[in-house]
Each structure stands twice: as C-alpha cells, then as structure tokens.
Length: 387
Image 1: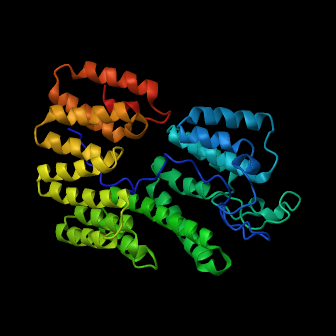
Image 2: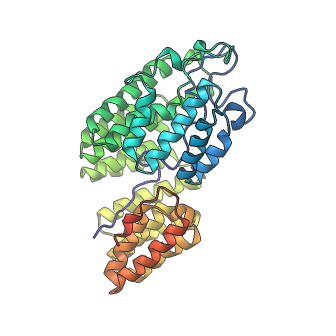
C-alpha cells in the first residue's frame, strides 16, 4: 500500500504550483530606483512585458498548454520587442514544458538560448541595450530561469549536474547578492534571503531523496545560525522533520519545542497549525494515532484548507482501521476545496484506501479519474489513480 504522510506545506519540494518571477533578477542596481522586482517603475505586469498578466493568470490556473500556445503565437508574430521580454517568455515556456513533464523539450529550449551554462553573457545585461534601457544596469535574467536551469538536469537523470548547478546558484545568491546588501533596499534583501532559503530547500530535497540526512542537517543548521533565520519557525521545523527521518526523535522534540517558544505569543493560524502538525508527527511516530487525529482536527477547525492536516488525519484514521471515515475525510476535501485538495499525494492515498475498502475499487477509481480529468490542471499526473 502506498499511503504517504505529508510533513509540511512549506516542505522541501520545488514550488512548481507558483508562476515564475515575472520580472528580472533583481540584479539591476539601476540608475533609478530599479533595484528589485517589487520596487519598479512599471504600473502593471503588462507594462513590463507583452501580455505578462495573461501568462501569470494562466500559470496560476495550471493552464500550461495554453501558455505554450500563447508563447508560440507571440514568437511567430514577432510581438516581443525587447530583449528582456524574450527571456521572460523563455522562462514561462521552460516552466510550462517542465510542468507537462516534457523534460527533454524544456532542456532543448534552454540549450538553444544559453551559451553553455553562461548566464553572465553581455547579451543578458541591460547595458548592452542602452536604447531600450537607458536607466537600468545589471542582469535581466529572471531568477526562475536560473533555478529551472539548475533543476532540469535532475529530471533527465543527471542528478549530480543538477546538484552542482544548485550549489553554484546558492553561491551566486550569497556572493553576488547577499554580500552586497549595502547597495540594496530592504525589500531586495528580503527577496534574496527568501531565494536563498528556496534554493537550500531544493538542495535538501535532493539529499533527502538519497537519505543523506547529515548534509540536510548541516545545511539547515548553517542557515538557522544566520542573522534572522533562527527565528523562522518553518525553517526550524524543517530541521525537526529531518531529525525524525534519521531516527533522532528526542532531537526532533527539542527542535519542535524551540518552534513553540518562537511563536509563543503569536496569533497567526498558520503558526498555530505548524505547532499542532509537529506535535501530531511525534504522536504518529509513537503510534498514538488518536492523539494525532486530535491535533489535526484542531488544525482543520482553524483552517479548513490545511491539506497537510486533512491528508494526515485521514491516514491516521486508516491506521486506526476506520477506513470509512478516512475515505470521507479525503472525499469531502476534494468536493469542498478541489483546487486546494487535488494533488497526487491525496489521490494516491485515497486510491489506496479504496483498494483496501472495496471489492469494486477499479470502478470507483475510474469515477474518480473521470472527475479529475474535468477539474485538474494540465500538469496533474492522472496515473496516480493506478487504473
């Protein structure tokens, strides 16, 4: 049986459900105030790039095939008039191909533009095009494109190359961006620190897949020891999750207690649910599924769209041999909040429960599969129903 407990919504997996960074790298220490994508002179996404608002909307809805069509049309009709627009459209195109699991096509698309692994070519800097960008300087490469370039080799079976690129990207963030904070705004600093955490999370996911727990622990401890990061409850919780995976239960408990201390006076629902989910994971390791269910129910009462709590509550009920209620929990979530609940982990778990509970599980899974075909985004992997 293939049931999967989920640890946290802010886990190590690349957040492919979000659209790429719409603007450039925040590299531009412009002559004007253009030093980050959140503080720029453009009034809207479409002011920055041709029909960028439409691309962003399609990405948020998971309409990746429509994105490919729109990009193909814009290119064929020569609607992109500035160099940075071509890079932004390239980013969306590579992301869409990756989401649709057309990894070779995504890699080929990148290779036709990049000169080897070189992002620092003069063709990618604003100063090369003074007529287009009289007041800007620095790189126009979107951060999302740098990340996709690093991640893509892993989808083609080249894990080590992907890791090398990710570590190079991490070094780029730290040496070229975070080490030059005096020339940047607070908004830009916060953005690059978030990107640092994002890349580290990606690297951790690679090492976790190979059970390289020591590397993960070292990366997280290094980051937590930095200024400001030690008070990030999600980051500290991640360390606890890693400790649990290599069997350090007492260490995880100590780490989760630190999380509780950090948010002791906070009234944020997300933070309260984080603490409850951490407690529930400890209960699950001790096979105290009743107590775990209680913690997850508190999470769901506070936030009815907390899919980690909903999924794990259902699994705990299954372990308690209450398959009927376990199935109802997941079915109700899919019916109530399909855009949030519909992901492969939830569907795999639900199908596992069907297989355990019903003789005619094939017919039931076919009904589920037909419903998924009507409502799922383009990138949903329907093979998770195992029909």
